[in-house]
Image (tube, rainbow, N blue to C red; front, side):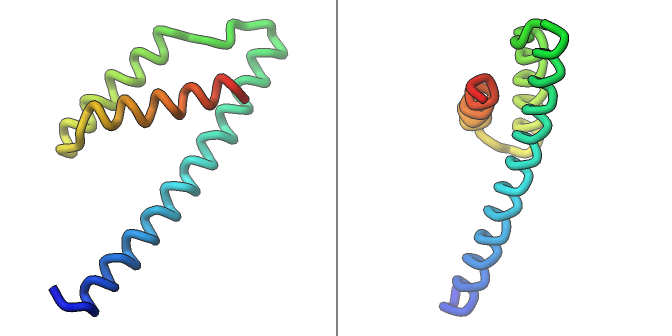
Length: 86
């Protein structure tokens, strides 16, 4: 790999990181809307079965994409914890 190729890959990684942040921001916005909806109806804020279904679905998708299921579970544990603290 040349220095130029390395720089190209790094720029691509930076671009992907920015996309991840944009998507995460959109997810947080939607999560906040859902929480507001639930609070307005005195609905339970936590849906353990939905959370379990989400993690199972993401784990299956991670396997398809040859990603670490442990990594995906840890990332989403943080995302879910953050959404509950909003």
